[in-house]
Length: 187
Image (cartoon, rainbow, N blue to C red; front, side, top):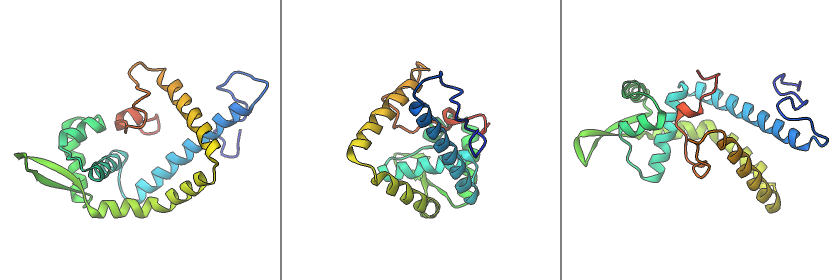
């Protein structure tokens, strides 16, 4: 076991091999994933949100940056939850000042959902430092290393996507519905 007790150096999940470099890299990826999940959990808690609320805010912030209108049904589809659950999420986020409901100009009866400036400021405050440190680490890599890593991550992503015919490798950069991203920890 490693110092955190969760990622063994034995390569348990991988076949025995003479060269351990690949297993070491995959073990480092698992450590990164665990660290990322823990960081996001800390930030989410600091903002007083559950995982679904945080994903809703992230989705609305991205939509705002892209100039896309978001209706409640769009949020329901993205989160992979029922419309009743979406209503509860929106109520919580409106009450906490993270989201506003606005009249839909194309449908007088409908509403658009917009992340507030408060939400944007809070997310930036919580994540700016960690993102700056991550970018600094990435900026220290050579163009050749970045090209090799791009190929590696593309192949690893394809290997994971090949496990399920419903997954799209080409859609790897698109945000996944929260219901597809949950692990046993989240449920």
